[in-house]
Amino acid sequence: MRILVLQLAPDTRGRPLPRFEPQLGVLLTLLRGRGHALSLIGMARFELDRLKRSLARELPQLIYADISGVCINLAQRVFQHLSGREGLSIVAGGQYPSIDPAGALSLPGVHAVAIGEPDATLVTYLERVKDPISGAVTPGVWLRDEQGTSRPKLPHLVEDLDSLPPPDRDLFDYAAHVSRTGQIEVAVGRGCPQRCAYCVNPLMESMYADRGQWVRRRSPQNIMAEIADLTRRFAGVASVRFLDHAFAQDPMWLAALLREFRTTCALSMRCHLRANRATQAIVASLATARCEQIDIEVISGSQFIRDEIFQMDTSEPHIRELFAWCRSAGVRTRAIIYLGAPYESEASLDETRNLLRSIRPDVVDSRCYYPLPATEAAETARENGWLHRRGEEQYHGEQCGIDMPACRPDMIRAFAAALRSEFPMDWGEPWWRRWSHKARQAMQAILARDRMG
Image (tube, rainbow, N blue to C red; front, side):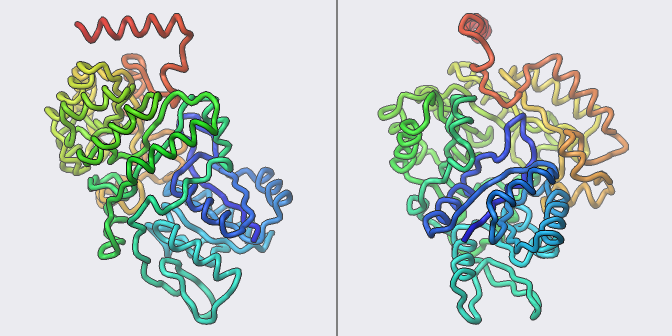
């Protein structure tokens, strides 16, 4: 079957679309392995001419749309064209259909919605489209037909992640990404033990209650085999970026992976680390494994916003200690913060600025808060009447997604501008790619002097 895959996702720090996403990549590998002819395009905004060219070139028999939770309006426009003028059958999956399957099934032209992880849902469904079985239903795939809507239960989770094939990267033009950044991106697992209120993870975990182990990790040997293969395939690989937010939350597994990484790989690495789960020993072991940068979710300088609104269970001492340990170990830090969260105020913005001044991150990733659908924080904003009437437009314009009397969007814009003048900002490119060799040496000397001071 000829399938056109649409990745409907936002622009992220200048990263072009289609953008590599591990679960989507695994799905593409599985579909290719079953003989489907695939093409992939990514869209962050409605581009009619580009869509028409892809349809004319690929002549698809079916559309699979992977829809981000902040691209619902985009999906509506794209599907109106596809269903109204092209008559193509559309299957939806990804983040938005998983958190609101009924809403996704009501989009124009959508006749099936694959919920949750697609390995055991969409692959089976498309095989049955090719070779229909009378009366058969596919676990995790909602269908709409003349008889109504069927809502079968989810299948069990794939617990042995080593049994899955490596994700497809060629359809994402991954060679261009490596050439531009020097990085390869690797996911080591699925699921997260944290239950932060700004994330869809708690909802997804509850959907899979009694359907298998939620937090799963690949074996270190399996991960290192993928890294070795990617290093052979793509020229210019200098670093590995581990994508998982829960990367370092299993100390025994992490120790085994870092031993393999140190002894079998010459690359540097970058990863996430949660302040409430970090130890000085973990930071030291990461540094020994050539970790060049650690991404840390500070989110806010306000303890109330972090713990009461976002339920992060992360104290200021946690944050201060982690940044101090990283500085002592010689590892760069990237602080991720949200501006304009529920109950944000001038006082909480000052707390964020003061905390950043104290912890001295090497780079700040400053994001205007947007309430993802079906999250607890979004419900808090809805109950207070703070959801912005322009919705997704705010996200794509990098504007605050809620509007509170005590903290108007213009205040957030002014504060963000002030931060940009005071702290190095993250523009989505590895720091060492932005300077010449001499400038990089000078910057390293400055950083070393700062650490000693």
